Length: 166
Image (cartoon, rainbow, N blue to C red; front, side, top):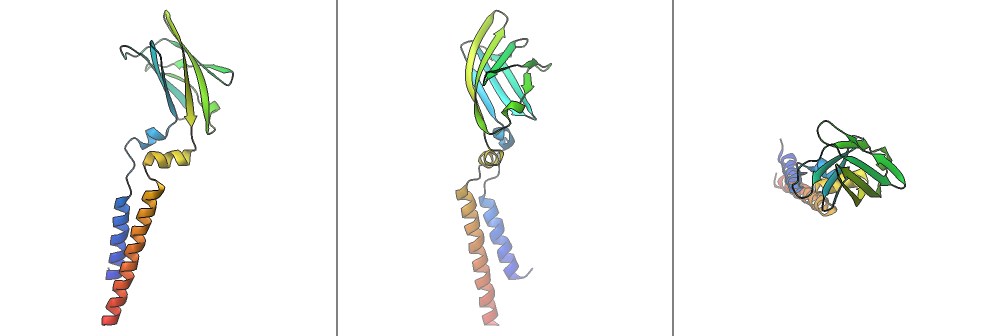
């Protein structure tokens, strides 16, 4: 490899090392989710694969609650979550496909206990959400581009200087 190519490759590698790698949970962070709780229940919801998956726990003990009835009301439409064998509850997430903030009113009934929870499900633009979750911002991209350009300029000057010396 000639020295010019070697210098350019080194500068590109240095710039690439500056960019943060996405956290292991970047895809998790990019998924729309919510959390709602009361003195009785804690409910966490996450959209994944076209389904809204809900996990319901006892607020005081953090023990999972199975066999509950979970009704989600959004925009005047009531959906009832289906209990799954793994202890979670699911429902179709198609109504939450568009980027928006969805105010949710959730009624949880478990045995003799019942409570009303309110939260917002924020569904962002997938491209913007992915970049934010990856931790890569405009500043980091600009610095990496500047380092790459600087390395290329230095490499060209070294190449020209070598040509003048010959």
